[in-house]
Length: 193
Ligand SMILES: [Fe+2]
Ligand SMILES: [Fe+2]
Figure: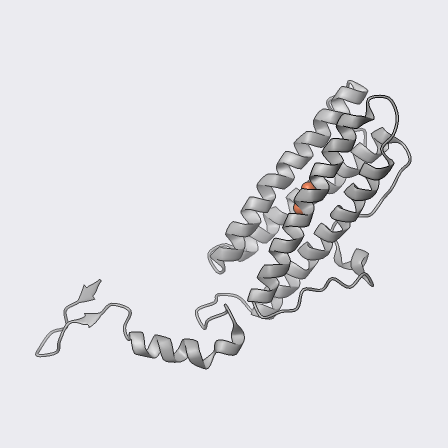
């Protein structure tokens, strides 16, 4: 897009000064993907993502543990679902870790303090229906916290927001899967809580 300036001056590119933009991009290269136009405090944004990362790690561990120990009559369908969810959560973990890195942070994968950083809990009940219920609770928490995060990033960090929207859609699907399994097992549409 070209803006015509009045007088004898030549037409100038709309992005006021491409050279200046390039200079600024080079000067702040150490900030990685964060440019001066980044609408949030990068440290605060990274902290938000660290808690999402911890949540995903806990979810990978919980689903993996449940998949391994799911036994009993007709448990194979549930086991397969837990395994698939563990894979999905692992993908989320990688996506979030990569974004933290892009924003100039170091993904915190330290097992120490993991549960205090996570929104979801780690539980490993022995009974299949209890596992499904715990996962449904965890997915509902994930849906709520990702919804909040999406509002936080909003237009200020579109890349992160779009990533979180994709993850949120998957968590909603997970919650729905757990709900369906619960209904199939218990014959009740609602979670007893
Ligand atoms: Fe996830
Ligand atoms: Fe999930």
